[in-house]
Picture (cartoon, rainbow, N blue to C red):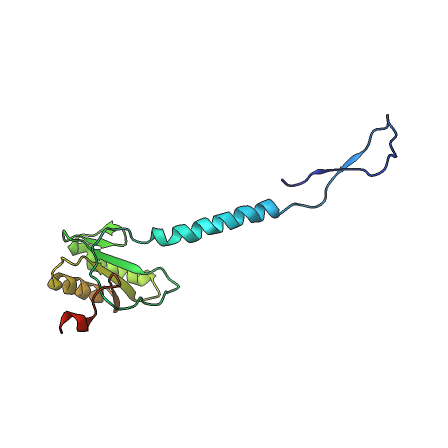
Length: 156
């Protein structure tokens, strides 16, 4: 893969004389580049799958997606059975605000994404939004699935 052996030119067909060999001074980087490109593709495919993977039935809406950020977004998830999950860690309600304050002190952005199951009562979602605000996060994005009904289709 790296250095190889190069035969000395010449000899003119004489038999019986030993040819001297010398090491190649060039390194073949092609296999290295091939491996790096394969790893790059693997990470590009796997990175979106590493975001929060708590199963939640999100409500559908016609709203578009928010623009991407440089820092990985903080995600709070409310499951159908009422659990609160900070990123991937289940958090008791009494510990939510102190944990949010600790996370807010380490982050540059005050943006947080709130994922709530469609079956959760609105009052519970608003309570968690209040906890997010008390924890230092004022920029709250509500996560929904796209391709849902528009407001004018609902008869409103």
